[in-house]
Length: 320
Image (cartoon, rainbow, N blue to C red; front, side, top):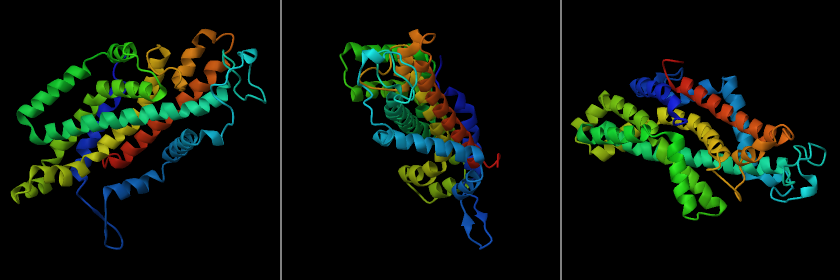
């Protein structure tokens, strides 16, 4: 298994180049005012059914993650062995797992940790890759060469093998508790995936620094920091936003994969990946243990992919 976010590199890079080329060209409205690409994109997104559907699904998941007690009063960790592997019923809509825990409650509470891993890993990846990418693209020369070669080294690491090494080191160090365990998984995902974000940001920065507004700023004696923060960064965010949206869903799927292999999240953290891992030996006798967490995982990943595709098409002038 390679980097779960590597598949979006080409599309996002094309978005970077085409977006930067038209970012500074405002579109006149009927009232004579200028309209930015961001407002054009939002206007376009609101008319896309896939964006609306994906947005509603994601918004609902966020509400479930923040306020799980609104959707269930059951304790996700309460065990009752007399109910082991019971099928769905009026008392437990999704049935019970091997240890007699309410699967519906665990799916609801698992939404929090699954989304948290995806969001935190996407932010960490974009932060590391974005900073290194914009520096490499702006300064070029030996710094660009050094950072690009470093990125290629990390990009060439097998994702699963790298994750096994990182997570095994921390597990042997005795990391316990839900938050530290989640932090280690997020760290492993970010360390192994930042080269993709760096490539996207680097491509956007190289395209942006060739534009006339950047050349004019340099001619007026603007400092590099001002050029980066005022001119490059605002016009390089769109492709990174597209990448982060799609990568978020990919990271949720990656966490489930790692947990299924026994090296990702574990008790006391509850996630869909942990539930899928717990059910793998009971698919034939208790398929409901796998069906519901896998269904939530699939819908969530698809929602973020759909959202990312809609955002990419809306922000890319060549696709609108």
